[in-house]
Image 1 (cartoon, rainbow, N blue to C red):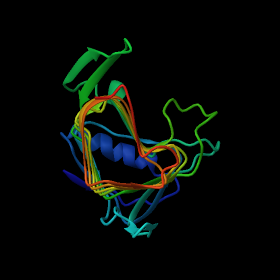
Image 2 (image 1 turned 90 degrees about the vertical axis):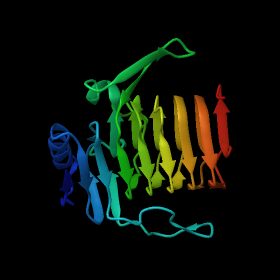
Image 3 (image 1 turned 30 degrees about the horizontal axis):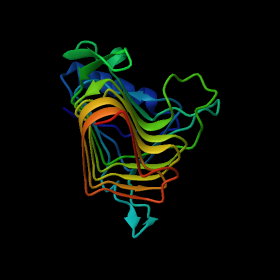
Image 4 (image 1 turned 30 degrees about the vertical axis):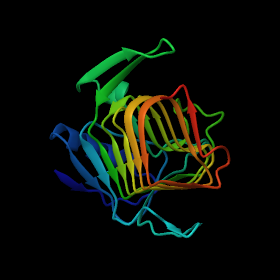
Length: 239
């Protein structure tokens, strides 16, 4: 069930969410985004088994250690109040409650639930220039925000000039981040907490590193992280 989403209007989040809801009701599918910059005043909230695919060529935008603009599809949020929101949100406790789920008590005493998502995000560049501090959004500023969703794959994507995280993920069991580029993600290229069996292959990160908190069984291969603001890789309570 492939759906072509052709809007490049100033507020495309509502249209994307409506198409996505239809795809979910049909059992899933892929929303194909056109080349160009899709500007939104709010986040797009993903549904289970609904995938997002750009026009191609979004990732690995480096020539040596300099970023070169090779992305074709850009997803950008610009809010009216000046506070940043993630362009794409995968929120398990809100939109995945009808799916298979598995819960456990984490080491800090909180309950984490893995909701089955089976979402793939491919060939899209995410950006948001606005800061999150002081806003009413309950999620941090990030290109992609994942909250307790299982089985997400992010491939060939770009995360550029984000005043927060490239990817922020709580409880993303089975997360795979492949062939993607992170440029000037101020806090971290990716932050992963309370997760297991995640993997990161052939990614390029410039200007920020990776953060892990109580995230076990991490597989990293052929990644390049250079000139981070903080450490290249930080592990807190991680095995």
